[in-house]
Image (cartoon, rainbow, N blue to C red):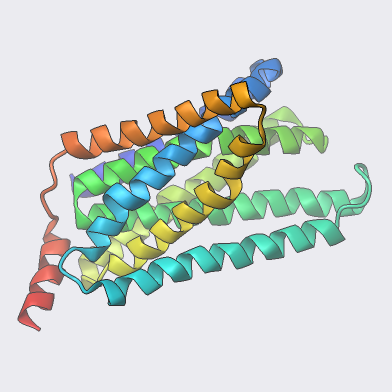
Length: 265
């Protein structure tokens, strides 16, 4: 039953998020409006998940100085990865119909797949801690992925990729979340490794994405629109706080074994 729960919620965090891109295929005129309000909502869910669920779970029963550097490492790791992606894009994007544009298309798909795989690791590690953390993580991933998938769909369609292929490519990419979530959860049960560093890295990743990519966009908007987006961000935070407080927080057997090992040590 535990594995089925991880499978279901990792699907919510990945495949279900494709609904936003599919909506774009049927009503492209809604794209900007959806992204305008979905992005800050996703940013709010990411920040709240990092500070309300992920970091507290990673720190539970552990010394902060052994865990917080992992969060810093996650923040810096994704900063470096984004710089590399932007450098590659700058040097391989000449004209919209050329071969280098095709390389950029592949880069979008590869980058999205890597992102989804990391999300899966975070979901699997969170479920190893307790079901509430896993569900909260999955909801935050889904809220963030929906506007991102809309953006990716738009990019790939703009590069001339056929609609059917766009859906197929993004579906395959989304499966990476399910695969890595199941593998992480299975390895955790088999080896009972400490998930705290993984959770801290995920928290650093969430904080980086929200703070560097999403929140600055809100500040750049006109006053009226920026206020609406800020309101959506706060709603995202409140949703995660509500979910985290409603769900039970019993620790899983794997997490209990790890915590007991820390106590015994």
